[in-house]
Every structure is written in C-alpha cells, then in structure tokens.
Length: 130
Image (cartoon, rainbow, N blue to C red; front, side):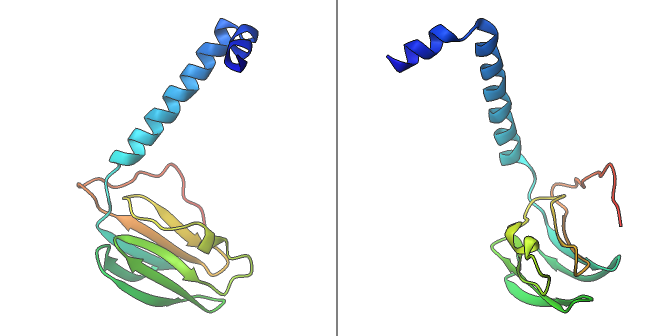
C-alpha cells in the first residue's frame, strides 16, 4: 500500500531521475570491481621515494617523517597506515589501497603511499599539489 501511495505522488520525471541515478551507481560499482590491481607500493616523503615493495609482500614497516615515524602494513595485497604521530589520524581512517593509481597520505607527516602497476596501466592525474 505504501509503495502505491509513493508512486501516485511521483511524476514520470521523478521516476526517470531515480532510474538514471540507480544505473549510474551500478555502473560505478561495476567499474570499481574491474579496476586493475596494483603491483607495487611506492612510499614518498618530502617528494622523494623512501620505500618500494611488491604489493604481494606481507610486512610491517616504519617510515620517518617530520613529526615522527608512521607505521605501515602491507597484507594480502592491501597497504594501509596503522599508526601515525599526526593529531587527527585521518590517514588511518582512509583505509587501505590496493588498485593501480590509488593513494593514501599522512599530510601532516608529509608521507604519501601510492600503488603502481597493474596491466601496464598507470594513473594519469589532472593535478598534483605540494
């Protein structure tokens, strides 16, 4: 009964908009599922590469920065920041990266983790800032 009331109050344009948004969400999910996985993790600090490892490695390591050391874990093809000396810990909440072109960063500690490789495709960025 509630669905019938809802449909009676919507116009054809409302229904078309909902269908287009639903189709866009499905297309985005499908695109994310087929995005190429990465091959290696590259860590940069102060614009210089400080660490590189294959994404398939299983290790935990620390990277130096101006605020202190940042702890990074590489497990099951996913790299994530476990601990950082920054105050808000946003980098920890960003989760892991595993696909080519994905990045995660601890901005206060000037650390950038970037995934490279994956079927010979590299991400093309429109803009990178310092």
